[in-house]
Image (cartoon, rainbow, N blue to C red; front, top):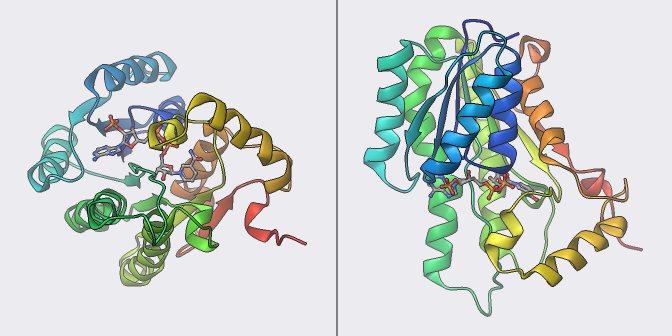
Length: 257
Ligand code: NDP
């Protein structure tokens, strides 16, 4: 249960972040939902209130993770409203395709800023509050942080950096009672891939291919990642720190043969 706990989720306007918000709501958490799309955030907030046993209303904070003042405002608004923070879920992220032959420095900056610099900044600002509550952090990484894939170069690098960030910060904050972990999803059926560069037909083929690329023979759904995030944030994971947990239908363990 997360009764009286305060949980901050970035990228809560869709996909894994939205599903996690609903799962935390069912467990009575007070929520801060952030993202850029206000309409979507308001929809998710309504779903959360309906799922919450006490009909708790989340605080919605519109924020671009690439804007330093927006990131500062997330933490300020959280503390102004709830006076504490127990869980930080660094979930917001973008996917872009590109290889060393056709990428650009603009792409590198977009991906690294959103997927690494944003969480780095937010975690810096949230750490003092999480230390006070002996709270926890869950970073949403990817199987692409653990394994190497062609044509998603900046994305793979960003998630590998997030994995190392997870382990290093886990060691830095463990003596202060804060646990830091990550989930590493495989292909999950959210809007992420369509937002990158795939059209509908390419996406359909990509999902079909999951029968071979994932040991369990299928892509995952956002709820399956949300339940792992909730677990890592909960007291049930009280002896887990610095872990990068695959939620990928076994994909990380596979080798083509
Ligand atoms: P979605 O595209 O559905 O969600 C991404 C979220 O990130 C949105 O809520 C979006 O909010 C937010 N976001 C993106 N850029 C910014 C920004 N600059 N500032 C603030 N918020 C931002 O995809 P998923 O739910 O799939 O992705 C969530 C996380 O899961 C990502 O970190 C992704 O890398 C990771 N992941 C996803 C996998 C998959 O197959 N789907 C596999 C492995 C990892 P808004 O548009 O409102 O700004």
